[in-house]
Length: 302
Image (cartoon, rainbow, N blue to C red; front, side, top):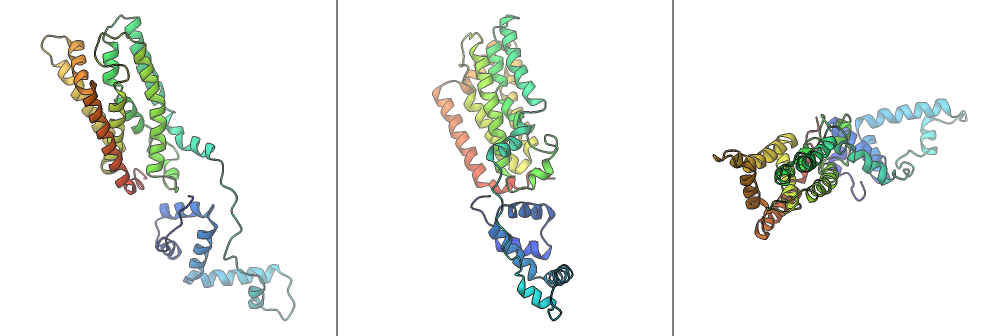
């Protein structure tokens, strides 16, 4: 982690063996690319009770492996061969592209990507094959929860067979969650918007009217995830949106579901004032994420 160094309290707990295994693995991963912290950890370990034992083992190994004069003692060898207080410079870190692909892979594999394609293709078939005039309205109602579901399906043990290992690395926490969220948004936003553009419009909100609501719901799910966990937070956020949009339209007594659904969407996503409200809500959720970023260090770790 460029620019980050382990604090003294963390190093002291690692040296005396009181640091939890997951945090110890994370620190050891950091030491692979930080010679400064590696030297500090080495010094801290040698200062503990284990340091004397390690020194004796080292002296015995040197005495057995080095042909020394008869008058030489292990202590002489110890002074002659300097202790490795500072390890050799670490190799250059691997390129960023493979690491980014490894971090983002769970966001584009599994059932989520086919589900996005199914939603987009299903709306197009409803409009151009079945002749359903409310296909765009239905797509706009469902589209905001697609990236929310993608976030839930891209992070956690259920999504990544290497989740425990990934969650114990220095790049875990909010950074890893945001990386996979960005991949989910990069796939779903243009794909569903393009599908909306090729659908006939009987009036109501435009094909891109769902973008800000979808982004806001995704950020809201991430913000709630710090308290509830991602899967619960996404269920609450996505389920709340679907209930707010679909329930009033399905409950209409005259049976004109498509018309009432279009009216609901116009109220929720239509107009500059409404879109401004969604933008303000998205900014608020982003501030909450930044303020509670440390809560994601142990998010669904085990």
